[in-house]
Image (cartoon, rainbow, N blue to C red; front, top):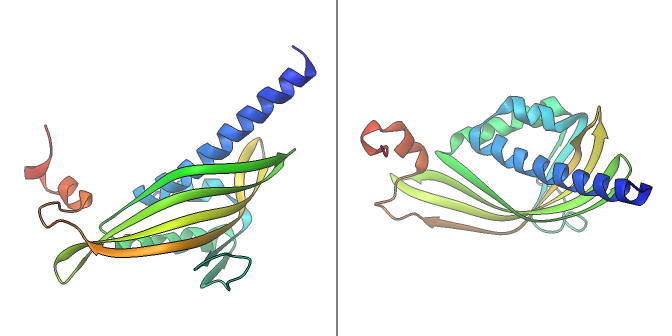
Length: 172
């Protein structure tokens, strides 16, 4: 194998591992898997949220350190369920560091006055990533919300969390 082939394979493997990292973040959020959140951030990681472009809008929240980030994710428990759908991703890799942007549509299902509601957000995560101990991790994650929508769900379609909890509605 030529050196250039090995570099190409390394680049492709790194791209896949970084995509998998974004998918793990979505899975951790939707399953409330706090141990997984802990595994995907560096100890000194930073996360901030912005309503618009992070370069031009101040953060509406900012967290420093893996422990603070993991603790903040417990706020998701207020929802009946969530679904983070990861889509486009573009990354630039430079050795053991990378920058990237990942698109996500996030659904947050909850009840208002007994009615099922979906708070949907179009998110772009702008990331700084580092490879530590052979694994890619988030060092910085800036969440840019491009738009939001808050709308009722069909009344005959209860949130997935309620379907899973009710044995009479489980599929055989």
